Image (tube, rainbow, N blue to C red; front, side, top):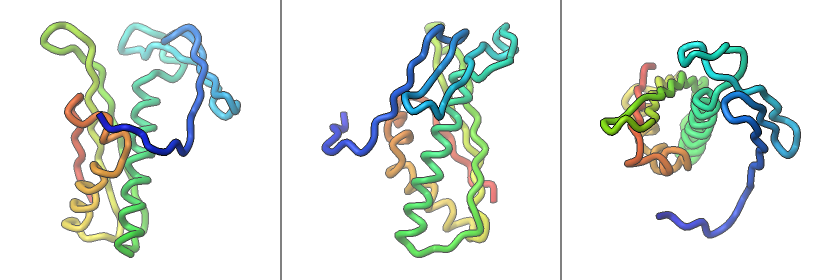
Length: 142
């Protein structure tokens, strides 16, 4: 386990009602209805935990890549990540997640982009937290 040595920021979100409830952050910037997606028998009229995880992971991973690019003084025309989080079942019928991210680093050679993505796995807190726990696939597509 990696121990935290210095706290930088704590996000606080109150959730009531689970997948059929609300999520509100302590600062009020996040205030969403939570609903099951249509694929799981719900109305699909709200956000679900998988969408939130997909957004959070991709945003954090892109931030890690930006840090690496700045340290290496590599200029880019922008980064785009399409993040897919899948909810499924394991061999014991337990719930599991998998994430697949398609990543484009515009204006950077493909081999350099692949190096940046690999290094980001060592920098991104989401990538470090999920390493060895769930399937995480990153594809450099441009």
